[in-house]
Length: 171
Length: 203
Image (tube, rainbow over the protein chains, first blue to last red):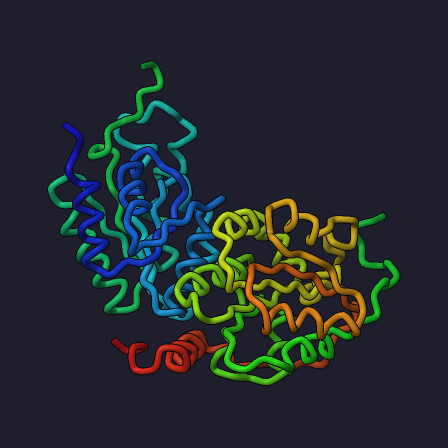
């Protein structure tokens, strides 16, 4: 049976009034991305690199739209200087990040960025919420969206590789 | 050609005059500026709450323009940035062309130099054609302006027509006098949102 959490996240994004969804394609978020594309009230935009999404969603918020960035941990490093836009202007930022390079990772090249993702985000001024249990994800996204948009903060939710499952390269 | 900065200026247009002329027909259109000289050029043409100035976050101006254009489909959004900033965000031209928002215009003030860091040559001084890149990415309209007489036509495309637009204005490298707009981020974003969204800005 497919996991329920992508649909639950989608429901939370809808409730939070998310209108723009920026993403770099990602296996962990594949179902959520499809759901967003299928929703006429959301504009889902595929990016060439994650930092584009940081700037795009800042522009969206200036124009009155709330947005979310969907990405995997390998893209976090790409975002760091662009986040000065959110931090310096106190523009809300919400990212849902699927983790790589941890729990049973096969590909060693994913490990350096995955390992440093929480610390890098925190050093950059982003509030980090981590979820290791599928049942906690929806509630965590809800709280993150509130902190981001009600308190004008940069917030990232890290979805553990333990929840998503480790990619099997030998299959 | 070297990557140094001792190359004769090929272009005559004064950047300050060019931007002022481009913005002359502007009414309440939304403007986002790329960091450095484009921010100063747009401020010199007249500060308004509907200008959002980048003072950093290099490479973000065009994508901020996309997000704003998608959020405000009935308003014209103009991004005015420099060649260095545009070169840092070439991928964004692909993303924007795919979305093809009919209310977004991007104008690059191209002095072929990194003006804030010592006038080092940018790739556009070394044969890289930003307009050709935008065309290849799929921008339905993309062209380069070299003469003052062509700026009114560009302003007409920006302010009196619709459609996704990309233009380069080639300008002289001579630096313009300093003109510093506000740089306090929360002030810039709050005044912009209030001017655009009214009371909804604080919901």
